[in-house]
Length: 247
Image 1 (tube, rainbow, N blue to C red):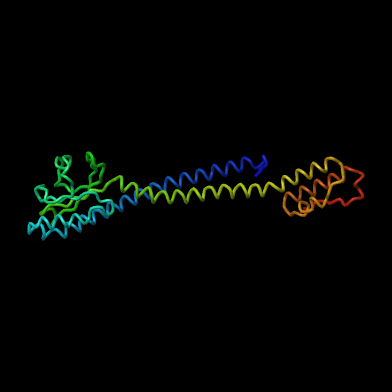
Image 2 (spheres, rainbow, N blue to C red):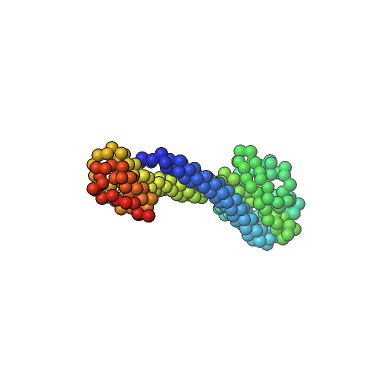
């Protein structure tokens, strides 16, 4: 698709504008989706922790640890949950899903706190750990660890769909802009060809440029003006229709 020199800068400017819009939109979209989905996974994990905490009160009071273990086992694997452990008010571990045993980094930490923390567990990976107190902390707390890698993969999948959409809109916009610019440049090319034919002082095929001469825009006005001047400047054409340009 040939583009006249007159419109080349316009096309490059449109491409640069689309590129700027696409990049800025992608960055904002990625950041928004990333933070939104991460908060959603964190909120869901906290909700699961509260559910377990509310369900485990009677179990802990009855010291039915096998039922407590069965309760937490069914939550592992849901929504990026990698591990769960429950401690009593003094920090003693009542139940957990670690195999074969509790990692040393968790044993060495203060498990009585219920703040959201990030952990790196050797041999397992990076996690975000949320917690929910049981009976306001009197009976202990439930701790849930989310695998950051698993959550990140799910977030990237959601972001990828938006990036594909933005990329498609970007390329369609560029091709549409080039097509419209090329559509606008065709009358200029025809006008240039008409001016060259008139400058040769030879008979011009008026039918070839009929559509150009009938145009009601600036290109048509210029074509009729060229025709008028060529007739005035060539005495041999005085008998031909002057084609005086319209206002």
